[in-house]
Image (cartoon, one colour):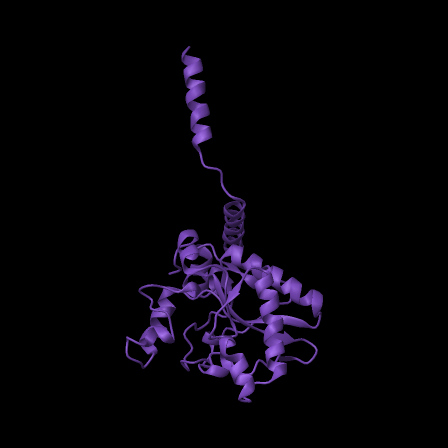
Length: 249
């Protein structure tokens, strides 16, 4: 009798254990890969920021996506803030699930345009870096959120689920003309204002067509764009990101 009671208890416990979704299993697998990658690398040769990202389970997209290019704008002074805030860190990291979505978008792009590839400008942005950007912005705190997410709240870059990118023409060895540069804060960069900007001669049909190539492959892979930056795409909403991931420190 005791044996039967024990069996029933064990069976009940097993049935009560929640089943992990395919997404959770995939993320766990990618985190194990990331952890193994860290063990196999020379720790002394990695920037502290990169080691920190790997320890939190994020992945280097260049190890997963063949042919993708990375030029982190915040590792240079060529950005809205005019400041290098990443230092020696020049790799783009994302949540494993987001990196897989980006891989699908890249494959779709190269299926239609073999001479094109993605050029990544930014991926995960740790809260420590977000604080630097917030403090560096010479604006009243009341309007700072119009330009950069408040580190006390965190934005989608801080979860590792947003990516800034453009398209690079391998044959021409240059980026496609999107009408504005990265981090341009003005209506010509707004997808929501493209019709108006076309009518006013601020951007061209060719530039909009180039943006549409980018939007098509990113949306097809599950990303969504925003109305004020042609280069920015989110893998999840703020609510979804908060439910699935931790803010990256």
